[in-house]
Image (cartoon, rainbow, N blue to C red; front, side, top):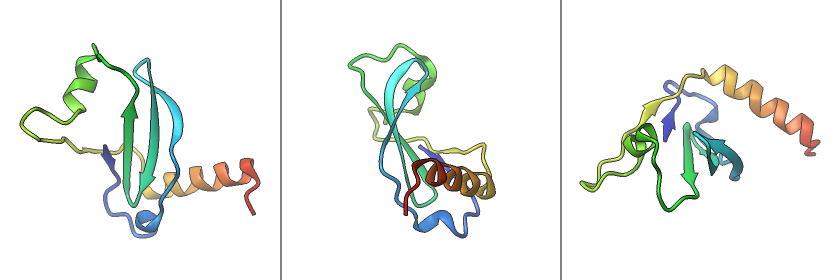
Length: 87
């Protein structure tokens, strides 16, 4: 999960899942509010970074700060909507 800090506009968005390769694994990314959630389709994950980000046996879930600003996310959403020609 990634969080976009100080989000003022995108915190009300819910985005449907989009298929994406994540560290070589098939996964899905979706956005709800200012959080990006990633789901990985795999029984076993060998990548240590991904295992670090998964829910731990203790129940802990690490939340990382996204490398994008709210303005970059706004621009990407606009670009995606223009490409899909959603009316």
